Length: 153
Image (cartoon, rainbow, N blue to C red; front, side, top):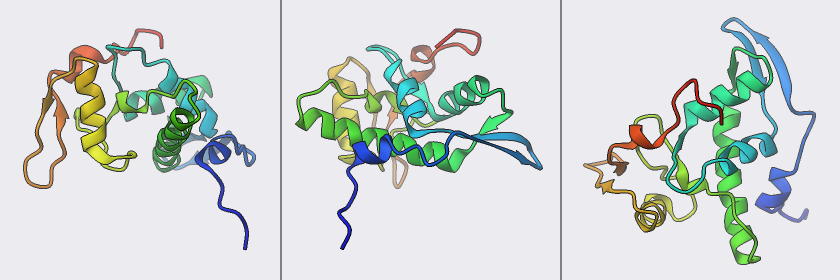
């Protein structure tokens, strides 16, 4: 049986990426996992980044109309899992906890789920609004912590 790849190995796996694809919606880039990780690493303390911002930055970098939402989402999760491996190895992790959904909500698919993400964000000074029903928690006033569209990453 083949050995299961670590998240770090998945992050560094290029597999012919990035790939530019013509679609009915326009030119799409399927990014490299490390490109996604690099954008997340730019989110300094006190700053948040949305998944749409990551996709926009990837599209701009590759002169595409948009970045693949599925691949980008998967690579955000891989970056989060690789960051946890880095923490265990006492390396500087990618600050995945600063990635929020476009509506300010937390990501239940991150290691430790919303609870862990909320705890780390609280430690960094963010206020978290509890989720209601099946809705995940959100960062209060998240708009003031994300970069403006014309601001460079």
